Length: 132
Image (tube, rainbow, N blue to C red; front, side):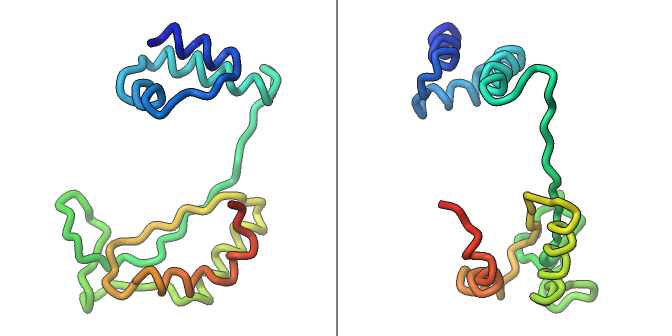
């Protein structure tokens, strides 16, 4: 499989889902490094490095999952729990953008009040910038 994938990626032939799964589950770190470098070289010179500026925003710490490894969450109604108001979230996103940010990660727990409709409402102002 290693030889087949190396040949396909070098020849710029798309790999299948099964081949991608094999890479994820079985490929050695050195093979992954070799193949990722081959793809990177298609777009960038060896002497170039690229980067992005990313911001992380914690939307809420209210969560009902009760994961045993998490020291972050608060149960609904518990002291110290929060859900950022939309205005505060927008200010933080704007700050990331002003610093050149091009990627945002939103962290949140399983807040019982955050339905898909609520998320859609929160992010509606940004939908014009989404690329599909």
